[in-house]
Image (cartoon, rainbow, N blue to C red; front, top):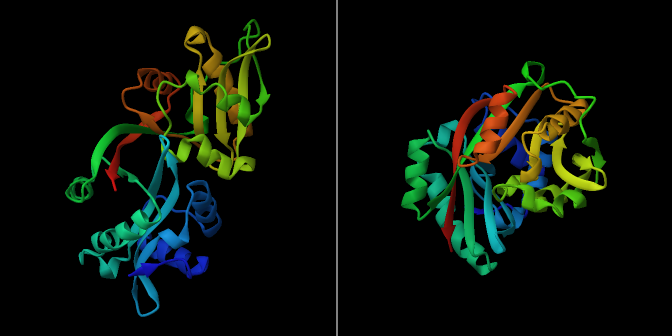
Length: 281
């Protein structure tokens, strides 16, 4: 087991593809590169088990701040099929902790599917605690039921700067997850488009979309302006720029009724649930 600091990306991509070849959802090499960039991947603080020169198990860590705490984020853990059942993920995890502490990382963050009980149990055994539950929604864009724009609506929807959205984070009902945070968006800002709902000069809501993936990274409306059509107008305008056939809204807090209600109203289907888990280092 050793750091991936001196490992070229092609070898990491090959291992990632082999580990997740039996998954329904696949990413190509460029998509993986973009995903890791957005999530703050640091090879020097990511680790893998090698069999001779081949990567057979790995954890790819993002490094940054989460809730103002220096954090490592598990952006991808996998083991190729032939080496599963040998406890390699736990060994890599144990190996990594001293290195993360040495780098002044104070907590380890991850997300795991709630129905993956064995993984949840292993993480809890290793000292992780469940901090939040997340819903994730997905739907083919053509299946969405977005209300037509009301010509008499007082809201004007137009593209705006990401910084405008960041200055109105108070519109959100919950802090965004690692991959949806403004830190993550800021690592690849050119990949995102932001739209604002304006009432005169006042911003009353915003939507941030990653057009290449169909990912609604954030959508939020001032509480005083909810249920007045601003959210539907924002999403309708944003999705005119979507270059993917599907729409995703990932890591919405399960306690956020407004997002769940909005998703149901537009036929954005609930596909599953995750736990956010954190271990203090």
